[in-house]
Amino acid sequence: MRIQRRPKTTWPMGRTVGVIFVAWFLISFIPIVIAGFGFNFLPSTSWVDSTSSFANIFGGLSACLLTWVFWRTRKVAAKGSLKMVALLIGAPAVGYLLGRNLVMYSIPIMSAVLVGGTVDLRFTIAAIDQPGTKRCRTPVELQGMPLLFPKLCRVPQEFRQKLAPGDEIVVSGRGTSQGLFVENIRR
Image 1 (cartoon, rainbow, N blue to C red):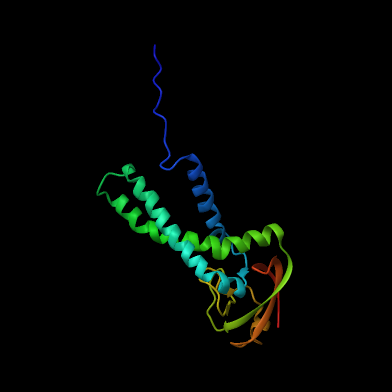
Image 2: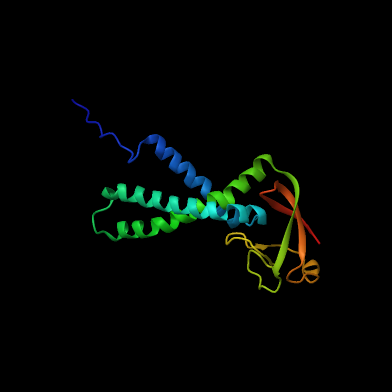
């Protein structure tokens, strides 16, 4: 009786590149998980300003890479299938966001967790009259902040009433000069 073995699974670009790709993908999701669980993280405005161009370039390269990976593995879906068309259209957008997240958010979050200490960062108020949401009942919108973390949440109402657009606040917490997890707010 002869045992038939399944054919060996081959990775489209090799196992090492596949592992690197999966690690990049998971690290890029850290900010989305942090925001989803309601942690009050703020990247510093200096980090956002200094890395914005690089984040956009890295996002573009990531979009190209992810599109190429899906194009290369197109044999998974039948030609002309709706699934493959959706993957090829969605891959650039997802790739861009993941690449940008890695530079703009994941690096400051990981440095805050791994080597962060108590730090104070200055931010400028953009708006205080924004309506609250289920996750952020008393938001204070900050100037120059990127899309994923544009506001400061859980600001006490009595402190919020003393603020006006253009005012500067000092935010303290665990982190680095790249960003912090908010613990305290003062003027």
